[in-house]
Structure formats: C-alpha cells, structure tokens
Image 1 (tube, helix red, strand yellow):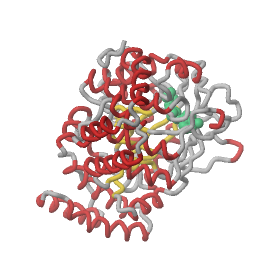
Image 2 (image 1 turned 90 degrees about the vertical axis):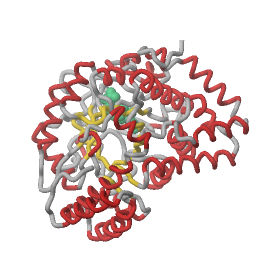
Image 3 (image 1 turned 180 degrees about the vertical axis):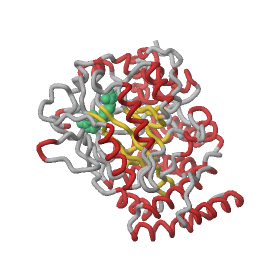
Image 4 (image 1 turned 45 degrees about the vertical axis):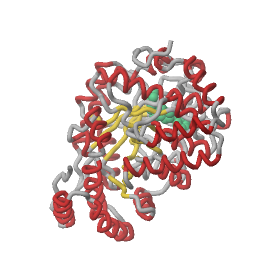
Length: 473
Ligand code: SAM
C-alpha cells in the first residue's frame, strides 16, 4: 500500500501507485484545463506532487510545453540566480563484487584494469585536482567489502581534507558509495562529508533485480532504504538519481519524486540534490543493448519538470553529457556541473597507459576545467567554487529553510564571487581571468545589501593581493 511516511521501500516507492500515476498522466496529457491548474500551482514555487509533475511530463500540448520550459527557466533563475557550482569526481577504487549488467565494474569483467588508490596516490590526485582549481569533490568507488572498507573511506577523506597545496584546498568531499549501515553513515558524517550520493539506478523492482543479478546490490529494499539509514545516521544532505536508459523514464521520474516526497515526509527534509545520469558506452557495456534510452528532447523535459516539482533541490549533470546538451540543461534547471573530469582510478595525476584502462564510462565533455569555466562565463553564468553551506552548518532543514525564504541568495552570490576570484587569481588562463574580472565587476552590483557589498569588495581586494583567508558568508 502506498504510504509516504513508511520506512519500507515497497510502501513509499509503491508499484501500484506509480502505475496509477502513469495512467493518470496518460489520461490527462491533453487536458488543458488540468495542465493550466498544475502550472498555476507550480508558479507558487512550492513544488508539485509526483502525480501533478507526471502530468506535466506527459503533456502533449505544444503551447503548454513552452510554458513549462519558461517556468522551469524562471524558477531556476529565482532560486539559483546565474550561479553554477563546480565539482569533480575522484575515483578511489573500481574493485567491485556486484554484477550490475550496465556497469563495467561488474565482477565478471576481466579486461578492465582494477585499481585502488593508496593514500599516497590519493594525495597526488588531490594535488592535481587542486592545481586545476577544484574545491569540491565527489568520491566514487565500486562495492567491495574486503578492499573498499569503511576504514579505507574514512582514511581517504582525512587525507583529502589534509592536503593544502599552494593556495589549494578541497573544502567539501561528497561521496557516492554503496548502500551501507546506519553506523557507517554516522562515521561518514563525523568524517565531514558533504552530501551522501546514491543513485537508485531504477525504481522498477523487477528490472532492478534483473539488472543487479548478483552481489550485495541485488537487495532492492536495502538499496532503496539507504537514504533513510543515511538520515538516521545524521547525514541530512543526500543526493538522489536514477540512471536513465535502464527502465522507462516515466516510471523513473515518478519513483524519483516519490522518493523525494518520502524523505520530506519522514525526515522533514527532501534531497539536497538530484542527479540525472544517462547510460553511456563503457568497457564491456553497449548502451544500445538497453531498450530504454531517452533522446535529448525527453531528457530536457525531464530536467524542466524536476526543476518545477522540487525547486529547492539542486540538480547535477556530469560530463556524461556533451557541451550542447549541458548548455540546454543549465537553462532548464541544472545548478551543479563537473568539469575536467576523469572517470578512471588515478586519471588526474598521470594519463593511463592504453593497456591499463580503468575508467567507468566514456566522457562526452572532455574540456578542461578552465575551458568549462570560460564557456560558462561567456554565457553570463558565475562558476561558483563555494562550499560554505555545510561548513557553516547550513545543511538539511536549516539549508532548506533558508532556501525557502529566499535568504540563501544573500550568502550564495557573494560566496560565488569570492571563490571565483580565488580561482581566477590562482588557476585561470589569461583569457579566462580577463573575462572573469569583467563578470565580477558587473555582478558585484547585484550583491543586494550595501554593507555586504562593502565586505565582498574588501575580500576581493585581499584575494587579489594574495592575502588569503577562508572568506565566506
Ligand atoms: N558503487 C556505488 C553503488 O553501489 O551505487 C556507486 C558508484 S558508481 C562509481 C556511480 C554510478 O555510475 C552508478 O550509481 C551508476 O548509476 C553509474 N554508472 C554505472 N555504469 C554506467 C554507465 N555505463 N554509464 C553511465 N553511468 C554509469
């Protein structure tokens, strides 16, 4: 039975409820009157239920679809301004005991090179990432309880935070690792992680069981209930996502929003982020072997509808997508992107030899971080290297409350400008620096409060004189 408050996967991701939702959306996809009502509700910027959002996703009236895109763009602007948060993935280990049929890390794949970074190697990777200008990482690893232990992760996090190379520092470590226990989530929280990210892959239980035929990840309920355990362990910033291409996108879309509704109902705080990865070609994996791939138009519609349905949730797109696709996605709702990414284990400090490839999937956006930053600024976005919120204790419901009241802008905009200036001074090419300085001069006028503007101007001056502190609001 569907029960948003229940902690059981089969209740809060209830198959019958999803089927009913899909039937309701299908029946109303031409219902202009209902669609208008839903759009009007969405304009209040308090979000939509999974049923309402499913109707918008299915909406088949061109004129209404244009309204949906316009509203998504407006909500994006209202909540996130023109800031785009930057991050990079860091692959720690590709040892894995699971049998996921879409992932090259699956245990039976014998031709991918298996690697686990030592603490010394992590240090080299982090220095390389700091030298690019990154301040925020997402740690990635396969599931191997013997090799990739919690102790290993905790030690790695400690190593990463401890490295201060030149003016560099990793100030926020997010982590995307297999579902684990409440006690382990508590340890991750104590180690100072930002967001715990775990993709559901698919909410469709039957498909899930087929796509994960062996290994601990086969347990659908344990995987689906992971965010509940993470919250119980004190992690209040969690990141959801599905891997689009595995099952039917309408089903996944409803499941994703029901998951968000469940977290909000059970813990008073929805997901901090939602990622929208699409299945990619990888060693031993042909995405064409999966029937449910989605084209760029549907992908854009999904992003717009998520933006409208959960306005307070950040949205992430990775370098799985190419420049053109990312450009469109940024307008419709994405607030966080990776740049200069490598999906191999140890790929930042030195290129991998041809016969030792360890990467997880092909990257479509192969530009350097500097090129991505330059490109964003050409489109009038402010690339932000800010990591202040969680270090200021603005996580979970405190973050959401500030977001909902609109006050978060007073921190985000100044922090974005100051961290961009740090990037420009320390890492940017001359062309990027020139473009960035112009952008900052223009954007400083958008710091709403005059006193705050004065502080930002003073801090920018100090950064330019290389008189550094950890400037943040
Ligand atoms: N091992 C962790 C777990 O059990 O969830 C996740 C880490 S894995 C490095 C990160 C994500 O990569 C997976 O959750 C999956 O969605 C995604 N992934 C796997 N194979 C992929 C492929 N062929 N194309 C695109 N993304 C893929």
